[in-house]
Length: 108
Image (cartoon, rainbow, N blue to C red):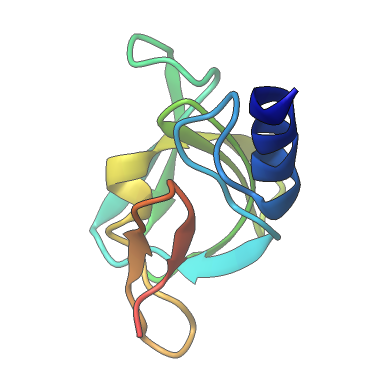
């Protein structure tokens, strides 16, 4: 019973249950690399179908394993890797980090 309560509590507070990394609420970030490839599925061998260009803002709203589901201003929706997400910045210029609980947050 205690183990079940911990797992349930972990899911409620946002500790990663089925995903390795979690975004608690949708966030807007800016691409700072020359481009980031948008994938059709949350898999390493998934097809790249769109290049998100430098300075473009994207909405990050879901996660699965080491990938994050995003939507561009142009309406393109797909997946980017955790490594690509951690290379973005907030509108204020803050970097993203993955904390010890698997949550993605802005660096302080």
